[in-house]
Length: 361
Image (cartoon, rainbow, N blue to C red; front, side):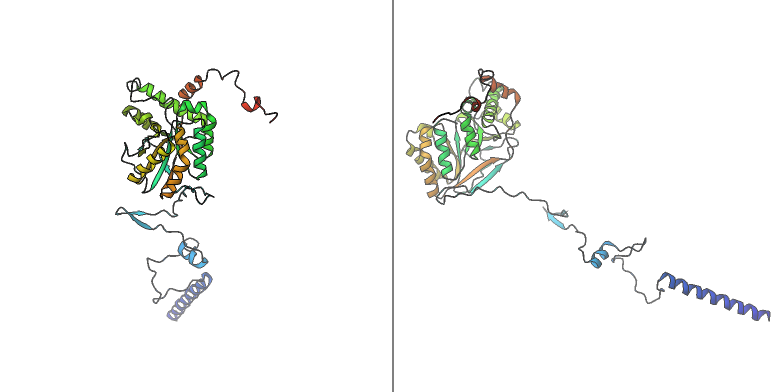
């Protein structure tokens, strides 16, 4: 009898335990694990242990939103690198200005020059950076600004919807800052050509680098002050004489040096037609080039309309050079330029418009 009671009690206990397991499973909502359940692959996304949250890939799929961007592997120079999640922004090239004159020469290309370290251009002296393509011409002018002549050159350029680079003498710029401002307002590039056109390869400048620096820097300061705004860190040596010490100094100032590809020698010519012939004959031989002329010369100013017409007829394209960064001046040389105008600090301190007015015309 005792044995029967013990067996009955054991069976009752087992039944109660089984009943409790079933109830617990129903309360938690989990399915019983069976031998036929498929194993979870290690390559699949799994449910997070805490809170049962879905992994990012599962969330993207169930909410119909794109999965997070995965960087792609790219090969550069035979090495594998990871591309950025989003492509870097690109800098749009500066547009060439539109021209309303269908017969004008216009501009074909605008190029930006990084003057860091003082790179040198012009194959007459420097061969490394020959940036012009076949039939391309860069127009450059020296020794201005000059009354009468510079306005004539500017008008011809504007009538042809084209642009040029002007290497101005600092002293000339201080005499006629209105001309320098007019060039800048028209979108011309303005560089410098020393303070007073001294040959820096000759003494005393060749022996004394400080005097050469002063001639260079006063020119930079004077042109900048005359324009009253940004100028280019572009420099051309007078007579294309480029002493090594002065070139090294310009490198420390991040000022680019320009020689030329084609020198028209317009300062030796007396007739406008001779200037045109010189330029076109030399261009026909070289096929392209940085063209050196002088807006100081009246015959050159008179030649410009016909020269631009023949460049157009000959299929030449004009390239305009601009700097990546503007020129900077040094306070020491700014003061030297100001001190040259000894009589303008007191009696002439007022603006011209406040003093002079047209009352009848």
